[in-house]
Amino acid sequence: MKVFVTGGAGYIGTHTCVELLNEGYEVVVYDNLCNSSVEAIKQVETITSKKITFIEGDIRDTQAINKALEGCEAVIHFAGLKAVGESVERPLDYYDNNVQGSLSLFAAMKIQDIKKIVFSSSATVYGDPKFLPLTEDHPLKATNPYGETKLVIEMILRDLYNADKTYSISILRYFNPVGAHDSGLIGENPQGTPNNLMPYISQVAVGQREHLNVFGNDYDTPDGTGVRDYIHVVDLAKGHIKALKSLEKAQCEAINLGTGNGYSVLEMTKAFSVASGKEVSYKISPRRNGDIASCYADTTKAKELLNWRSEKTIKEMCEDSWNWQMKNSKSLS
Image (cartoon, rainbow, N blue to C red):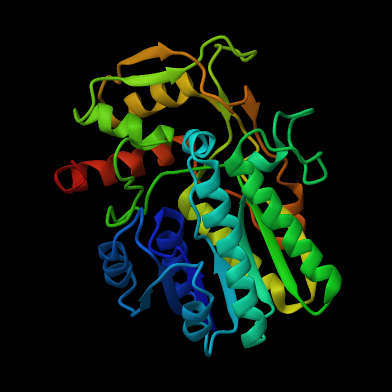
């Protein structure tokens, strides 16, 4: 099967491409490289000893996507802007890129008669949790524009399925991806200041940054810092393969991908210090707009529908992140 992967040069995209190639799929990556590099595609090819068809392009360009989709049988849709804080500052950019881009993709899929799609959604669609752990039937109410774009795309996909029950759609609600491939060849490489916790901690540990800013220590959590469900990116990538295989039957399912365990910012910082042998200094800063206190998954549905569960520990998440950082510290600086 030939699989079309939007945003396939990015962090989660590259790790998923590794798993796709290892499972024998043919992969076409479509990416505008706004927060990624074609070098990451080359590294995937090195890891797997297999080739990827790479097309540079914007998902808002329906005509270009339509041409690129020729011969593909399924889509995994990662492409999108993804920084919560930035989305609060630049909401129009997020709606334009994420929502309009998705509409262009879906329109091209319709032209090509492709009805299988795995969509990269987010736990941010749940908003401020009314109960924990979060199940897929928790009320949906995002607290920031990034989350709103994911929620709108989910609604579009459900409406698409309701209009045509021959579609097979898997909506994967990620929690917090961390870690890297154990080869150290691919990992999270944000441009500019990292928006996510693990790459920031890594850069402090390796000496690229003076300290970690901990945004808020007055949340209703055991140590006052935000609690999240961190999942190893390789486990997450394997979840996409399980989701893709589940699309043999018509469906539209939203499924959490997480570990079911919550760790605070300070707990993650301590775990990384142990894994790296480096002290990670930090300072307490004001809360960020749109952030919530705690968020972790109920993963029952993923186990039942996909036969998937996370396997890697917080220790492995930190060790693999540090391995990636150490092997790439010069190129990442």
